[in-house]
Image (cartoon, rainbow, N blue to C red; front, top):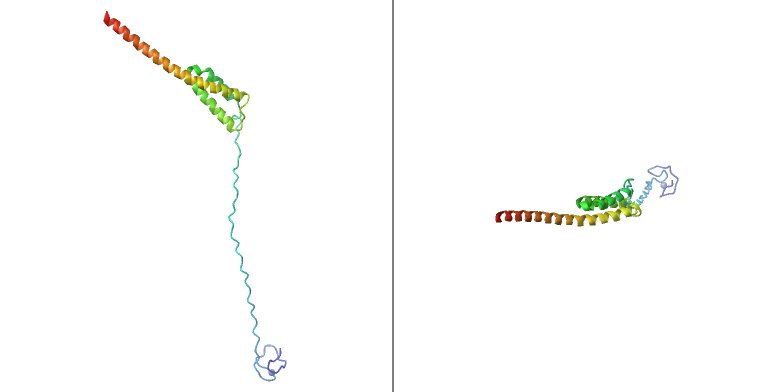
Length: 157
Ligand SMILES: [Zn+2]
């Protein structure tokens, strides 16, 4: 380094110039302010994980079997004259149709025939139930009427 006063060469780190005695001003080490790059805090984007509804239709083999529809349909129509018997079979038949369709079954062939028979069975079962109710009322009324007639005829004698 050189003296700022006289320009003489002096040893590094000397406090005073060896030639003129002027105090050597140590150049202050320029503290470069470390430019702190502001860390751009990326706003945390909420990760929208598209929850695709996993549509895995459970297809038990039994549900895709159209035979129960046909059987219950036939039974519904065959037992419609009993009223309640046909009605129960028809309701089972309709449930089987629902399960069949829920499982992805297409109503055709056996299933279609079974559904039609089941529907007819349902209608006829309801009609027969009404019929039987009326029938029993008539029979009971007739029986009571007959009993009353007998009673009155007995009194007449
Ligand atoms: Zn000097």
